[in-house]
Picture 1 (spheres, rainbow, N blue to C red):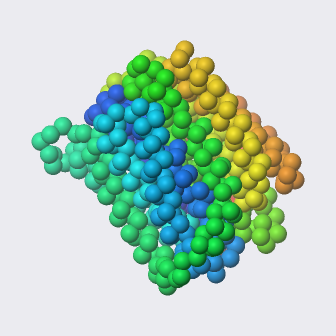
Picture 2: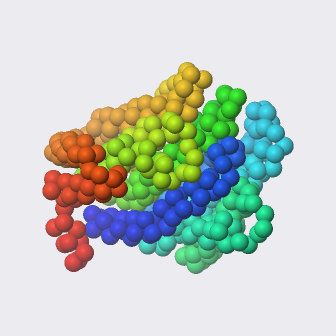
Picture 3: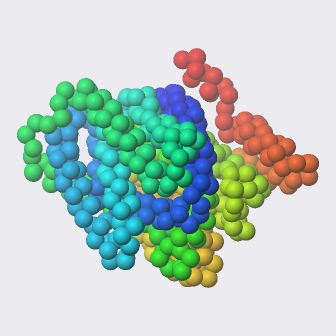
Length: 477
């Protein structure tokens, strides 16, 4: 399983390093630079509002299905026959709830015009993810890896043409960005549906209401967890836009740093998507999962610590490089959010393990407490510190959630703490903090940035957090 994990992770990382940096730092940054902070904040807050309620499209079906198919692949046809009609029905409920909630919040006609398209995009994205859970549950990880970057690849093509292809004499509009997402999602959904249809032989047999209700009963704990996680991850920008007179502008300022943070979390998300079916299968077969934990933990923590250290030593330079204009505190917000990336990386390991072990009651309790912490802190800090307050709230919430999950894994699953890895990680942090201060003495920030990056990579190998011998043996096999 370790070999399976490393080889498929390598493909996932390669494809995502090829595509997603272009998407985040080329396309999304390019769009924000072109339309400005206020207009991008307008889009960003609406996107997150639609995303928070995305749980109604899924109600935990995707995670439940991925775990179930990984354990018993014979369930594929039965699940397709019950889940596809169920998801279509849930899409109607989702659309109604989003639009009614928008009315209650007092959204304008202009906001509703964009919200309609964002609702459609969430519907398309939800079905793509559902079809991908079947593909990864069947252990076709390479196919799933290719699909994971297909939508972004198409968006890069379409949005890039609109931004720089001189296809229109009119100035670029944020609506064009949303429409490009719609076309890209539609084509990716078609591809993923064709692949699942080929693997299953059919989509629909006789629709079973009893089967759909059974799946809902089994999946609702996943749904609650997704809703709670979406709230404490996404509610910041919505609260910024609603609580402040200059809310759209502050949401745009927050989005500048959040987009980089989100780009980083995609790395951790890859681990979670790959680990869930693997952990589920290992637990089903009563295999020792700690070996896989010991493989994934150093990789995730090295990435998290490296990003946090580098981003905080060179936070102003990174923000200044990416954006034509930015607020004075944008770099501070960026540094705070990137510390939170370390906690998110931890959650994608231990949270995925708890999900695979079906400890969803405990996860939901912790997530609910985290939501309360996040909203209370936002209500206190946003009126006083605006977007900086939202960043502080996010960091504290993510930290609490990560440490609570580690505690649950040690307590419920009786896994060892892997103290030897933690000691080496502490040494890794100390070495690179020192390297960071030394790098500031070099002339020009790029040379210092490269030195610190090289220090992070070199110390990871020197401390045995990444083992060349292990990677070499897996490649030979």
